[in-house]
Length: 368
Image (tube, rainbow, N blue to C red; front, top):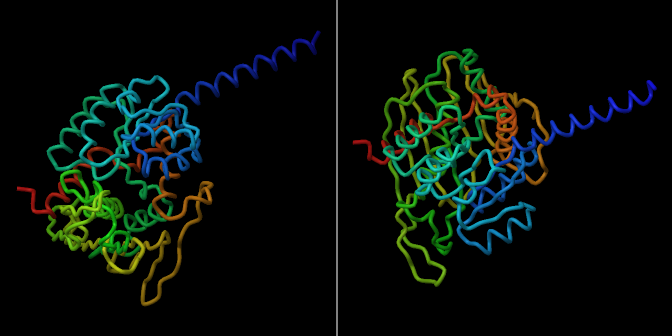
């Protein structure tokens, strides 16, 4: 009968839809290496964007297993290479100290995985060049650096207004980050305190600041010089013994861009106050300022809020521009893994990472 035929057609349609969902879900599976930012922010942010976290790796086996159980991640390991061997991982997010980035990124690409790597890209320009070469050897795979602020609507509008000439010719820019997060000299020594591991505010924050300037101004840095300094020169380890701090906790730099614009950069984590990340761009006809996640414009002495509305749902637990930017990045990754590669176009790739690394090394005076 026609009713029976209709029921059969509906069953076939439901089966096809279920199969399509299974296929799509399998394309959105990611593994995370790192139990810090990767679990505190990336897991909830990526899940909010529709990605599926299937594996977690961390250096401490017991800690990793506990966190995986708490977050309902099905696979946990202390051997990060096991994540690369899994068929249920299409993209690997590397959220580890920078001294591990090159080895992990190259191995992940060789294993056929897409890669999202934390900043700073590497320890130095030579390592970043090697990572760039590895990405070029696997052109069909994503090889991205986690500069998630590029995906915030406010940052994208700021870039568009600069590019379209809404504030005239860009003459100068200033980017600042002031934090008390490491101002306590009794805060325990960790890898962040060690330059050889990639610790320090220049790599952690300065890399984001440089990327924001490059992205918003749509121009490349041609000259860079600056100062890096360590004010708290020793910290207690887990046993209470004082260990030397070899990484920087303050940096200031001046940059010049191919467009002719100049910029200043300041970042510190040992102040006794906290100021939001801010980027101000001064043009011949006006000024744009991104501060504390909001966007302002001025053509005189008064700034007006022109912050665009959010375009995705943001979990209440993810507060601040970096966690929220990670949600937006997650949506772009989800679209790209589903075949819509244009969604990931704003992302920083390994080429951007190399360009930023060169600027970092120049600021340190290591570009010779």
